[in-house]
Image (cartoon, rainbow, N blue to C red; front, side):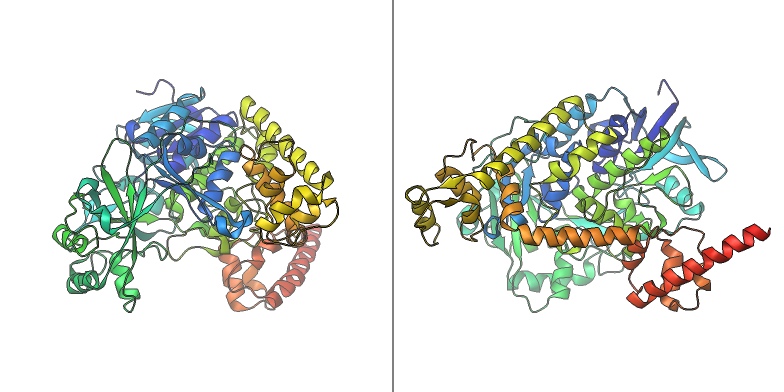
Length: 633
């Protein structure tokens, strides 16, 4: 039983979004309650036990820079780390870690226990407490009423969730072994919110002892001490290898012969699935001429032999899943430990939110995670942190925290959701960001740390470490800009890098501008007053800033122009549908989304540059007429 029933913030759900929301709300000073069906499953990795990847790795590091949990939990549970895209230079590096499925949630729960302002309650929220159109709390299935100034819903796949295996009717579940949230989904819909359905899936797990490793390729992690967390150095477990194999023509035959037995194609599921993480059935149907598809075998943890078969997500019947595995090299005798399945669930199209992730129609209610139509732990964590922080800030009467598109991938994510909407589960990619040279994994602390500190998202120890990291980076940059190097010292390194030697002493900065030469190599050759093996992240950040100075400057200039557009403010009272000089499509989209600035309006699909010019004229005319009308009255 909850001892107190009054809180500043109530967080519904304890997944990646819920954990970050609760922690962020507490860190800004709000008295917070988290309600979740199973306390032991807080922070659970329901799908692949991995964090990061292209763009996603940057988001995980942004969450950490803002004081979040994900970076610490990843470091404490990772059993393999790889920095992706290292051959392409530090500007596009992306961290990815395979985690121990049991250690990760334990690490999340451990961090949450450090937060003195957080209360955790086991239960299922069944309804909302309202005062008119404003939410004032929640009601649990046990009839307990809990009051909060703000409420954050992070329900994941629980809202009318239904698991599908084969062509049989789906079974209601939020996750395997956990009941769905039916009452809450119905109440949100009855409050007038638009609702739709998405689906996602998971592959089978297999016993690694039944794999023939002689037929598959081994993939080891990076030997360097790469980290996700910038502020806290967790004890890192030993690494484990992953493995790579491929599907072939026999698998295509099996899938095509059983396609009607799939829940996805047999008519049981109506929701749309993720384009960029499709089931094996989707791959075969959409790419019929592709003879093979890559499959990764990824360890589930240190204390288990179970492997996650990444790339083989499916909702085919169990006996067909066994037949599928037997067609893959190395898996001919593999034994399934858990059957793959598809899950269908409600989401609420995110054009109904403001940029703080508050529901526009229900003040003080916030949504974060898959309820907004996204997919992925990292996207959920980023939204959860922002929703929790803003819910806490509003409850305390403080200004909201909004990240712009040029400040963070999290800002890109939220703006995309609200401005462009979703017609399939949303996943972040670098291509979605206009300012990806600025939004890198190596500069997250410099970009977001001071902002997090100003809002109160960082603890005192995190603030100290943030200042140390920024000072260290400035020291490294000063050395690269001011130091010189002699030919006898530089030339062995230059020749090794495949570039021409020098004949006289030059600035190290001049050599850094050469595409073939890395900052790390120059730091070692020039006997820099810092250890390159320890300061790899700061060196990478400095390298991009100096080597690509012109590109970075032009990107900053484009960001400044975007901010100029943002100064032309728009509000929810503007009668877009009456503007005759704006196209019909643009009027419909503007009325639906209700942008807050011209910059946001410019990103709405269907709003042309001509529409924007006419919109400025129409809004100015409408405002003049409104002033005249109000003065007459």
